[in-house]
Length: 187
Image (cartoon, rainbow, N blue to C red; front, side, top):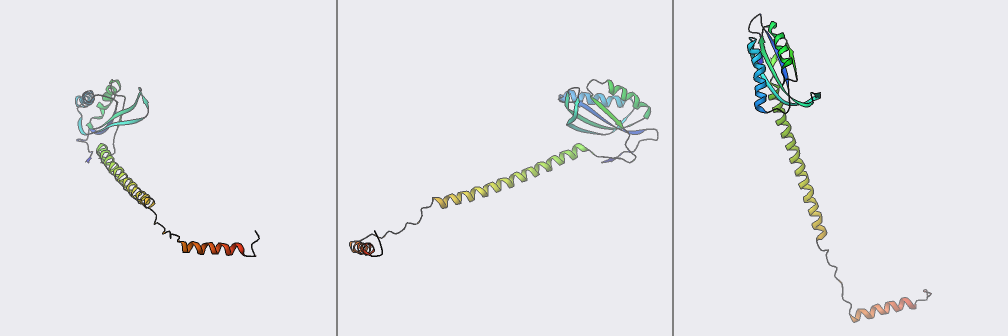
């Protein structure tokens, strides 16, 4: 991070945000960026920092584009030259919008493109961790289901059926006769 301080008492630091249409070929993108930088160089400006944010969505359509490429520049420049540069940016064909601001004294330049990339990586690792946790949970559920199915598939213990012998058959017949001959039964 750099602190913005003017190089002399006459100059000021300006922050310029340029919106370019998306999609744009890399060669064409670098040509447009070089044109913008050339405007400042011709005006005697000194580039302090440059932050290419890249492709971002827009809140509303601008000249049919729903996405744009953002580039942020910081220049040390004489205030009289800024009006000329803004006029040139307004008529530049590949610039959808631009905005120039004077940052406050001792403003810290934060490269948002790097912060954004760091955030994306941390978000991606968090997503991967969640995915691994879900896979582990699913694996545990599958193992439990397989164990339940294995228990169901195991044959039930066989009941030992005692074979009826003639001796036992005689006892059973006698018991049945006793029940039938009882006076209490009215058949």
